[in-house]
Length: 268
Ligand SMILES: NC(=O)C1=CN([C@@H]2O[C@H](COP(=O)(O)OP(=O)(O)OC[C@H]3O[C@@H](n4cnc5c(N)ncnc54)[C@H](OP(=O)(O)O)[C@@H]3O)[C@@H](O)[C@H]2O)C=CC1
Ligand SMILES: O=C(O)C1=N[C@H](C(=O)O)C[C@H](O)C1
Image 1 (cartoon, rainbow, N blue to C red):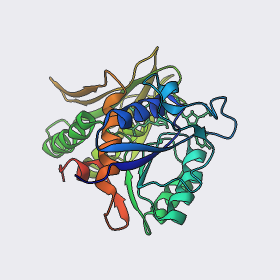
Image 2 (spheres, rainbow, N blue to C red):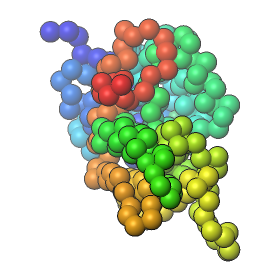
Image 3 (cartoon, protein in one colour):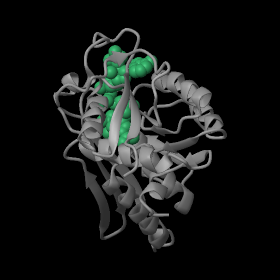
């Protein structure tokens, strides 16, 4: 039997980080190597497993990865948190699964640069269902590209009230997938006033924030007479957490590069 995979979690005190800590502790083939959070976190010094509600891990929440013995990093933090752990990964030659969304163009460039020297799995959603829905969306876009009368694409995402970025990284990825096939020029973020008749040349994006919703996405292809809707609904955060652990495991030993969840899941 091979040695357990030593995983460091960045953003370990957050909503997702706690579920990743729980997932690693429940995984017989993995062990928690480090649990990192922000310099100002009130959780620094607490046991990561106790904080996640799954029993003592023997790993305290700390500010940096330091010299912790580690095989891979999983990041569910903030754009700044990602930038900081990314440079540690490059220095230490560690693969990373990047989950954080809401990155600026320059931060995405920094991820691409890191991927020149380490394996990076970069996915706005580590959920299996979402990644399968992405393939279905590409198929639908191709099939409806030339449909008589045209197809209007609208993307609706629903998330919890605490989410800081909008639209979700996943909704943006769905929009890019459609645009790359159908060629729309604009993304319309919500509508108000009197925007006039809807042109086919835009994709509508709508961000709903409500309660504790862990994430839902609907992609509508509206035609004259019928609508195709592809919908995917998360029920717990564990779908994302478990996907990120699978991605970290998959990344270990790969050559440097920018990989996606479709490669991890064998969808590509
Ligand atoms: N790709 C995917 O499958 C998914 C991606 N996400 C994304 O993951 C990210 C985190 O989501 P969520 O867990 O809900 O958010 P939370 O706000 O609950 O957690 C983020 C954590 O990161 C910490 N943090 C802030 N700054 C740093 C830093 N410099 N270094 C290390 N840690 C830091 C925060 O600490 P503090 O509170 O002290 O600031 C907090 O504990 C979001 O971008 C979200 O969109 C979420 C779910 C699925
Ligand atoms: O913040 C969240 O919760 C989520 N964020 C990701 C995104 O922005 O796409 C993925 C998931 O939908 C949950």
